[in-house]
Length: 496
Image 1 (tube, one colour):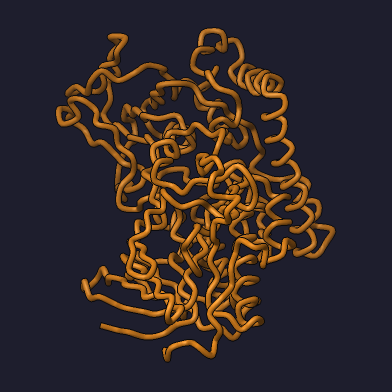
Image 2 (image 1 turned 90 degrees about the horizontal axis):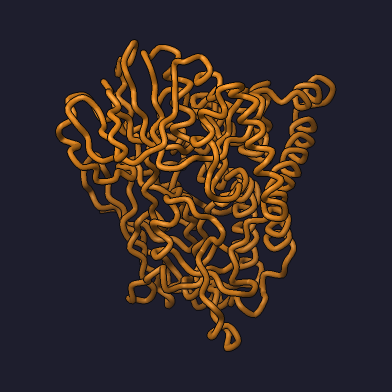
């Protein structure tokens, strides 16, 4: 059993963890850090998912790191290209030497006397227990389970004669050429699978309980391509990033301020894509909620609708009564025959990597804490967690949180302190407890809201989904604000 001291432990070697490590090396060069990664590879989501057509659902000029230009002419990138980008970033910054693969963190215990976290991890290749101590814990473990996705309890599932595929664990040699495929679900995964599989499958049906909004975007960004020809790569990337951030924010504001206007545009675009068949198919493309009450499904170059127009794919809106030997019986009485069924029914979210967290011997129930600026938890010292935007690119917020973490860590050194903890003030104790994220009805989040920290009704106990406001609060707002309390002088530190 190892028992060593490291200044900072990062949990997770995916998009967020690699970006945070690069930022640490730039802003806190004297700090020793390790990345504990439960799997045996870099990349997180982009290494795990291997299903046909896997791609980003945000443009790479905002999903990419702010310090690493995305130079490809393709803005909506394939999963393999994103994985290469993350690996290249790690290699350029020599991050690999700091990664310990097959280390799954199971416990994190804070001791206020020593101002240290004791981190317990299990090696997946040997079940050996590894113990590390650190002063700061950066949670970059993502937000969903890697071992399983959300799978409803479908009646009669065991009766189906063919394979039932989880996109999160796609079989390497699955042959669906000429086969009848039913994809259950209507989110980003289903919208990606349908056009990709329709190229070779006999026919692909997307079976949905309710319709989803689809938003168009070209795979290639013409302005980015032009700027790339005229300007240095970093300048072109920076300008394109600013342009796309502004566009994302504008679209989201329109959905909040003028939902009916946005709804009319999205439905007009769907009608234009489907042409004369739209009236017959309208029930499959008119959601019951407003745009961005759930995440919009990106359709690069209209590929989803092109597959439907070709006749090789279709959409059915109904509920499942039961699986049968040959497919799915719907509540309407219709039978969908299938050779392969794919359950694209959503993610199973994790809260802080499902790690047992304690402070001074007391277990922490994260659901009973308040979130501080969306990145720390009331009463939990020296821990910052990364969760990106639900209404924009994940990495925009991950980059800001990494910057903020470095600010806090450097401030601890500059002031001679060892710990910082957000504490509720007297005026905070009676504030209204609100959901961690509001105005977002997607099932994957609603299923775990009761496990997530609460946000309050005033700053800094709010979890904003606004890039401009976050940029101010993370970069410019004073660190010592009367809520984030710094303490424990270095000279009092117990020997590490």
